[in-house]
Image 1 (cartoon, rainbow, N blue to C red):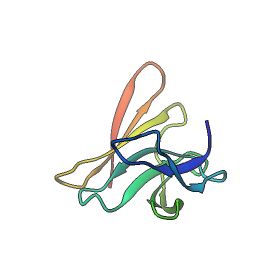
Image 2 (cartoon, helix red, strand yellow):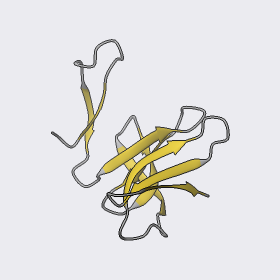
Image 3 (cartoon, rainbow, N blue to C red):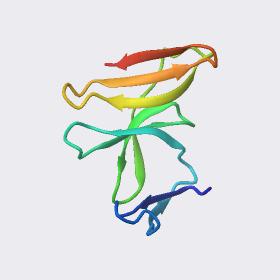
Image 4 (cartoon, helix red, strand yellow):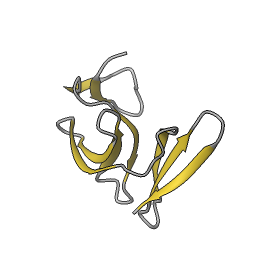
Length: 102
C-alpha cells in the first residue's frame, strides 16, 4: 500500500504513473461530477468534501462534513450523473444510512 496518487491507461492497469504522493491527505470515497471534469472526494483526516486536481494530485477542501453522527463511519460518495446531487453513505457496523449533501 502506498500514498501515491496515480493514473493508468484502462487497457493496462499495471502501467502506473505516479502523479503525486499524498502523505498528508487521506482521500477516499471518490466520484466524478456529471461532466466528468471534477473528481470529488472525502478526505479522512479533516472529514471534509473537496476536489482533486488530477494533474497535480492535490486536494482542495470545499466544505467540512458536519452532521454525521460520531457513531457512523463514512463509507462512500456518489454523485448522481443526471442531477449532480451528492450522496454520502455511512454505517455503524450494524445499519447503513444514505445522506444527501446539499
